[in-house]
Amino acid sequence: MAAPAQIQCVAVVVVVVVVVVVVVVVVVVVVYSCSRRSSSSSRVVVIVVVVASAAPAVVVVVVVVVVVVV
Image (tube, rainbow, N blue to C red):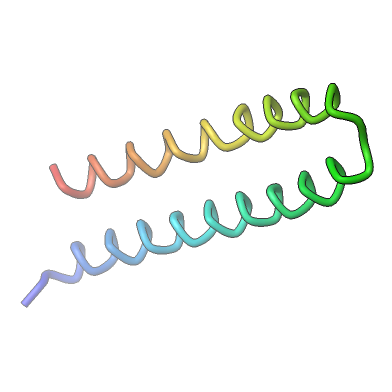
């Protein structure tokens, strides 16, 4: 059986992943709805903003997973 500390770490990882997924989904939905109304030039800016906002979240998830696994 897993130790309580491991269970806590797994719970933290799950929460972080869920939060990141929710944020990414919300951003994608907002971006999609905005890009349908705007020109193609602003779509590039929106994509850059999405990538820039998603990158730190992905890094945080990777770091948390590495810390928990190691």
